[in-house]
Amino acid sequence: MPADASSPLVPPLSPSAVYVFPDLDALDAVYEGAAAGYVYARDGHPNARDLADRLTALEGGRWGVVCGTGMAALTAAFVPLLAAGSTVVASDRLYGKTTRLLKGELSRFGVATVFVDVTDLNAVRAAVETHRPRVLFAETLSNPLCRAADVPALAEIAHAADCRLVVDNTFATPALCRPLDLGADVVMESLTKLVGGHSDVTLGFVGGTDAAHGETVAAAVSAWGLSAPPFDCWLTLRGLETLPLRARAATDNAASLADWLAGRPGVARVAYPGLASHPDHAVVKRLMPTGAANMMCFELAGGRDAVNRFLRAAPGIPFAPSLGHTSTTVSYPWGTSHRFDPPADKLREGITEGLVRVSVGCEPFEQLAAEMAKGLAAAAS
Ligand SMILES: *Cc1c(COP(=O)(O)O)cnc(C)c1O
Image (tube, rainbow, N blue to C red):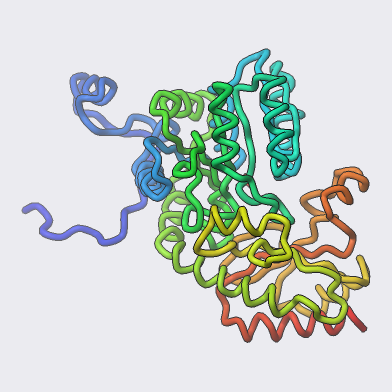
């Protein structure tokens, strides 16, 4: 057979768990790095490599690894940086499972976590100086009320204390914010959300600036079994093709929706960092000059009953407790992401029984507004 004169435009899917070698010399060459190749899929495969390379370039990192979920990526980022006796200083408004990882899992291995309000830089500085942590951890935009982490200021505090700044950039995405450019040492994303973008994969990414840390993360992925399956990587690579377009369209829709919602009957407040009324509006404008992303919350004055009426009257905006889908979905922080937090903690964060979280999508704005109008009319009735 003559060699092919053409090649596929779309990367092939490589589901193989293991790779074949012609002899021992070929195996040695791969292990020693003298030849490119893979041995066993938990340690690497072409679809994970393609996706990691693309995301690493998008983040401006020196290394990047794809993991089976966002939580796997966080585990892979943390484990090599921590040991028994070390401390993490973390935001007190994290994704619920991240708090659980730090407080309920890593704590059993002798890692202590101190939670602080990362929007209060004096409090962060005091915590870092007192506890001398290995890691300072924050989310670019918090869930659900989009409180922002001032990444350059946090990086300065961390680096003055010989500590790494790790940022969960899931809500912002690399299309709108690049934490490594702003001084973070490590960036992590749940690709399950906006980057995958179609609610059909669970996957995570971690990348950073220090190549030696990258090698220890890759070793942790193999030993802790955190690797990503080929088909999910392949689908996410496909999602990544449209990330900039989807991020743009959803951000424009979110800005329009925030204006449209503000002051509607029955809407007690709108929390969107693109609005001047948001407490972190100025920080977000500086960190994300091209737009404040697609996540927002609004509060229905009628509480839980009004939320139920809204959901039943607006089935075109599905109630689905995740985010980052192509079209708009809503979630209910009181009963989903923050379900198991004591009510006093929820209220301290601003999470009330009437609060609805919106993941704005890319559908035409008129379609979104028409469905929202149906929901709000029912909520107010
Ligand atoms: C969803 C999410 C995670 C966890 O990602 P999974 O892919 O669900 O494991 C972490 N951080 C944030 C901000 C998230 O929204």
